[in-house]
Image (cartoon, rainbow, N blue to C red; front, side, top):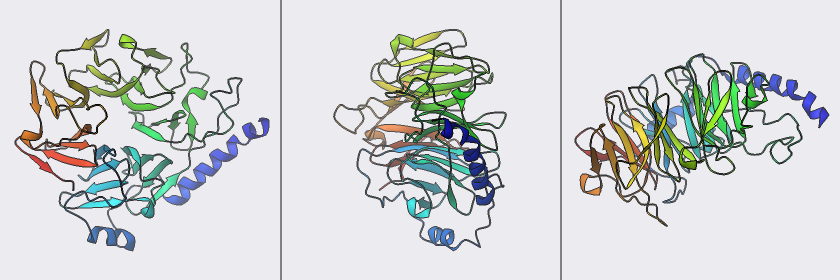
Amino acid sequence: MTNNYFLKPIYALLVTFVFLTSGYGQTRTNSLTDNQTESKRISVGQSKLVKTQGSTKSDNVWCGLQDNEGNLWFGTTGEGVYRFDGKLFTQFTKKDGLSSNSVYSILEEKSGNIWFGTTDGVCCYNGKSIFPLSIPFYIRPVTDNNYYTERSTENTVWSMLQDKSGKIWLGTADGVYCYNGFNFNRFLDNDGVINKDSLRLKMIDCILEDKSGNIWFASGMPPGEEGICCYDGKSISSYKPNGDGWIRYIKQDKNGNLWFGGRLHGNFIYDGKNFTNFTQKVGIGNPVLADKHGNIWFSGEEKQSSVESEGGIWCYDGHTFKNYNTSDGMSKYFVWFMLEDRTGNIWIGTRNTGLYKYDGITFTNYSE
């Protein structure tokens, strides 16, 4: 155990070497003329999201973003990543450099590189190629052997955030890691963090920085279940409204209120002082999107023993709810993800690796 502890600086140096030799930190380029593989992929782009990896109805379009160049990226739980340039979808899978075809988080860092959080660590796309980034899943040995181990094998990256200072936060199955531009460090290994609740920050489904600079963590499925966790720059605390320890979503509306989606006991709003149960509508799921107009979009509830939705999606304008379902052109499958692009279109990711766009009038199906 002691020998591995003293090897940690060596691992940090190796990580830095990987970044320097792989192009990490360089500004992403639009020039692809020197990359034949990329050119071939673009030439066979599809007008819809076509499945090629044998995913099932239980698989989802799980995450996504719009990058600085206007491209839309969608991560799936079985089909890798799709990039949409406004006309065609280009698929990236393990054969293109992803460490796994299950992608749970996507981040564009300030230099323009795109990070993908997968079930096998994190990868980076620099505009030419995808390469893995080596997170040193080595943990300082302590007495609690049920949690701290000499080496972790739980390296799924569920969530990512780059905060205002440029630090990148990664929520993994084994805890939260930070990247400071040079190396990765496990957040709770920092002795300066006040952790009175002895939180472990496992299985973090979502990370959000609020307008005041606080970092919020949504603790997910077992062995997580630590509820809503907040780091104010000095100390970290946990809240469990209604005793709900499994939190799926965190969204901030234009007024600064935080919306939390619980797995077991519904939804909650935090106004900066108090948590309030949000129970105005029976049958809604979790808050999946807070759009620029101030609307909160909710999934419908998922049918038991099914991958279908009980009620499509719901839009809440602060006063009333509007429902969209199959009669409006929406999918029958349960909604996991929503994204608002720069022009105001709402993109909706569902089970069965489904993808839809709502332009304010009609729904368009972009999946098979």
